[in-house]
Length: 394
Image 1 (cartoon, rainbow, N blue to C red):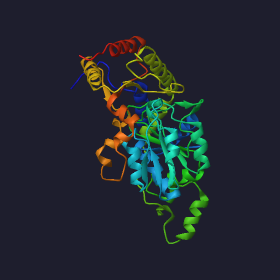
Image 2 (cartoon, one colour; image 1 turned 90 degrees about the vertical axis):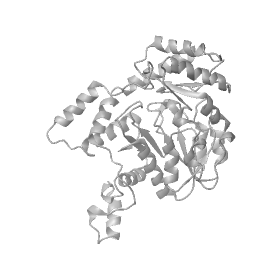
Image 3 (spheres, rainbow, N blue to C red; image 1 turned 180 degrees about the horizontal axis):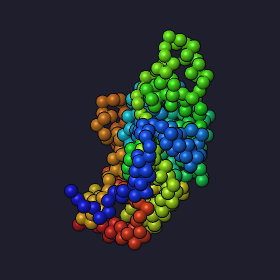
Image 4 (spheres, rainbow, N blue to C red; image 1 turned 135 degrees about the vertical axis):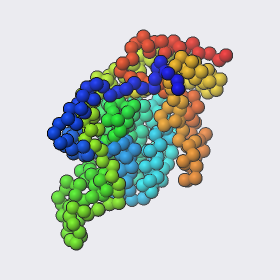
């Protein structure tokens, strides 16, 4: 196994995080499954983000699945416009819900879906746009927000890779009908595994509470909703009314305890990541690599490295150089590149060929990300820039 001098990530779980877990486990008769710590973390996360409701689940993928299930329950059948550059669970969640994914190409400056192409793809079947904020970049477009509202198309934000990034000073994850976050081990804030769904919509929140826990009516906090079911099904035990077919996607108290500890230093860590990225692009050769990404409001846990022009020999030289120096990377950027090239989609529908989305296909072949973490020093970043700038074709 390669020992990387520059790993893709550093351990984001501190000694303090472990100490609070030990203290929690050492308390008298701690409840380990979902309980008051989960509720506390949901409340603190809502306050930090600036939303009315947050619902903790066991992963970001579960957040996607529950949100799409709720969309299907509230809007029925239809199409969801999705990015080709995203994590597989975004697209899979649309398919799991019995909805139809529609792919559009990305904007090279944000790596999110191109707003113009989104609007061109909306039909009378479109019920939602599932927008991924890729690797900490702001993917929001003001004119898109206006048009989606006018056309009654729901916006769902995937903020799994962009905790704390902003658009015009407002945190991403506060613009849509719902937003999803992942607290996976490699992300800005980690609970080891975990996720969050956020919304200002009361009805959606009540539905999500039930869907999180087997579809159980008792999970809803709405007495009117509970009374309506009780009146309709008087023969059922009120504690065991399954209002919707669903799964168990609850989290644990231990995950929430870690999240509460990590939240205290999230803003400080995010500021350092943003500064790191700006330094990286300042000294990276902009004739060889793309440096014109939207940096305002960014909160990137990776250095995005994309060749300016297609060049397979140069690509191979870059990878060989990074491997020789022990710098870990992932080609294709978020989710492994163009999802239309992945086998899981091949027999599921009449999707466009990968080559018809040229911007994401360029990233697929000629883009990478390299780890960006708060403990990086300026001299290390400058060393990396110098290394990349001197790469040449043998």
